[in-house]
Length: 193
Image (cartoon, rainbow, N blue to C red; front, side, top):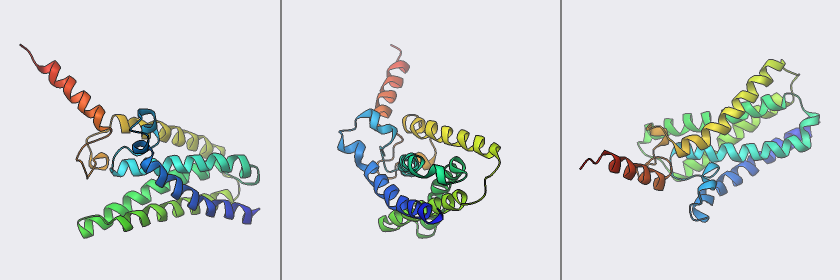
């Protein structure tokens, strides 16, 4: 049982890394089709990279639920923990190295993305193979997962003006065409003849 779970979690690193990478480009590939902004990166902000890692991990966890949840313990807890470890690792590692270097390097960014997924899967494996934890942790984990499902798309469409949401390439936030529409509407409403 333990070996099978280990293989699933290890393969998950590959699946999540590849799927997350594909989700980075899907929005552009489909001519910025708005519904895809829910799960795909719409700009180069740190937030959008956290989002694609989350959705890729969630998709993989659904597959795991179907195939191995019956031979594991703490499935929901393990997945919620993984969903938190991945973005927290990305944030800590990315902002630490860019603070030291004063800039980012693509190969380091990609390495951090994969390493963070590995750490998330490792935590998941530990929790899946340990004794059953209290049910209150499962309830808390469900709340965490639902919250993440809501905030990732929400902050794509309505990002706070914080650096984690700012696209370092174009300097904007969220979906640009939306931002332009809102800016135009605000200017129009503020005009008084």
